[in-house]
Length: 328
Ligand SMILES: *Cc1c(COP(=O)(O)O)cnc(C)c1O
Image (cartoon, rainbow, N blue to C red):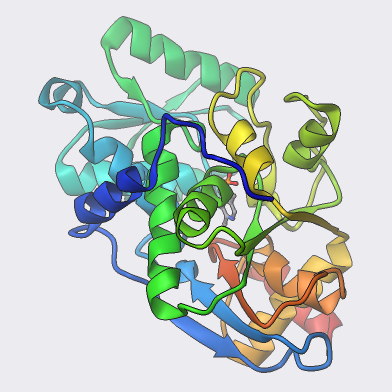
């Protein structure tokens, strides 16, 4: 689908982001993958966002946002309630810049995740029993102590930061016609689609989620942001709502997405196994969804030069090795 982007964010913001984050974020490789010939006639390439310092693309958006803060805001510090890749990204960039970061977590968050955040130098603030409590505590810190909340996706600077992936793809594979993007809150898809469709409007954008709790997909169907109950999934980085007051990513995803693919758990597992066996690479469930989309035969249209975004590799190795065993 082609549509004009919301006027708040333009491709110039993405070029600015690229200049801004360059000292902290390396360009990632784009590699061909040839093991999918049974499933597609297309040439498929993988954008390896698992190779960043924090092993996920979220470093791009977090860097662009934090580097855009005023000197006064930097002195007061930043906060977030994500314990996943966004929390790691905020902690990492804050440490690089010598800024205080406070990550609000509920008492239910796994110790391994807390340790990962702590090892990046962030302060942990325990608050309540669930994600909602952590979110409230985070906004309290903003109101009472003046820390800036760094949102995971629904923020123009975060979207523009993720969009720098699109600029790299255009340079690395100028004839790309289809990009397959793991989809949760939509910052990644909105940014990449803005970068690519502004340049070449007929590039196809495919969003991929798990069948369980695909909040963006169900919201688009309902015509407005909705809430779904979370269920366990291998693609845990794709869990979470899109925010009932979503301002940017919902309208952008709606304007840009050409196809949505929903995947069962066994397809996601097959995608993780493919990356491990074919490329000797550890990737998390969310990152394996573009591969899974091909393996399950759900990618439609005349696809010749496709790019799948391999979004991250923060996965429990026990989970991955169980999958590898069961695919032998
Ligand atoms: C955050 C994340 C996504 C989804 O990005 P959104 O901007 O929320 O759509 C996909 N994969 C991984 C590994 C992530 O951490």
